[in-house]
Image 1 (spheres, helix red, strand yellow):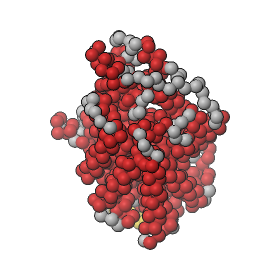
Image 2: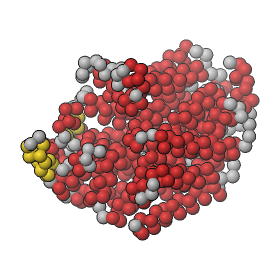
Image 3: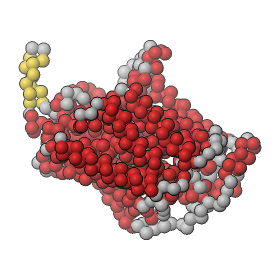
Length: 58
Length: 545
């Protein structure tokens, strides 16, 4: 069996844990500076008023 | 003792200094609730990881790994791949973008504004405010027990002292103080766990040799576990047996998937200043989690090798016959799995390391507890009082009152709950959050078609099914609470079915496996049948995608 484990399943999950952390590292390095689509911050919305109107509507 | 007290004092002083820094940088409610949306990836990811990993994940689940072996590594894999990668990349980014579009400051507020529903915000806030303190109380118990054992302080004094210490910086500095201290505590945990892993492999004679020795020890594997379906530490469990169901549904699926809908974790995605910080956080988070649960499970399993190498066999007279008992972890710990890791540290490591390890456990408990106080407090102040009840006043002050109320509730639970409740309370809260919040949360950020009615039905339905299942079907919670026994005279409603039948096995299946799919189904079916949300509002929600 691999890695001294008693079953293939245990060897696979052991390797998967390391690969998952490695994958996270590669992803982070690759997208280190990626900002994605520009952000539009919220408009000046009066949420309290809007929520009250919605409550009346329901 | 002088070294212990000295190191503890240094740790407390650094923690309080970081709390003070958080307080100095907190001037408005936005700082207190979501750190002014200005955090970096390193602090955010370590805070997320340290909040996620409490003492029970290391001591409790590490001890469980001494019984169930490497099969628990599926949980580590899910923690990294689902809890970090999927959570940050596929959820974190959209949560941050929608949070900015809707100017949301808490997890319930994000849901409430997404669905234009004050009820959803209030209901989520109520679930968090009333049930999070049970989980927090369990973490507080673990922390107080550590202080009692480590510094010899009376348990009740330790419990109240720990509450005051964490309260001091959460109340004043809000989430900034929480995240700064979490990051420091995460660093302490990381270093200690790395040393823990290397030392254990060294004591076992090397990497492959350690695993091989454990594989060869299968003849000493406890018979009781074999009857439940386990084969060995490095062999796993037989498919469909009660222990297979316990490992793969409660521990792996329940906790592994449950992390996605934890309000105290999801809110951290709204604290970062840019998308790049989230991407960088994936690196720190992935490595951190591997070094936490990964190390705890590997060391927990390998502790059997170390104990056996050290003690071999002990002769005991059982029923008049002398038997050689192999000194595996559970035997050395006298059958109490929560004692396996502490005994392993005490017996196999030098004093300086046991001191550092205990500090790391303080760090693990305090980082989780501080985030729970903050999440509970913001739910009370922002979501219940200000939004649901339409109360008026200064947001910052009301939220601080909410945090104080959460701290008091947690202390009450800490005093009332039994010591053995830690793992149970954790699993229960994770299950409750998944069934109540996950469908509404996931569909809310990915599907424009989910309606207000669909979201409400899913959240209330998921909450109800999950709670009823825990109280009447799932053995661990049902037996601990005892309501089923009082009402119907049986431990669970399925216990009377023939052993090994499908119905009988349900008592070992986590509530998530049943309640979560039903909650998703309710959200989808009701949404397809009810009035759609106004397109202009949906455009507003989706404006940053």
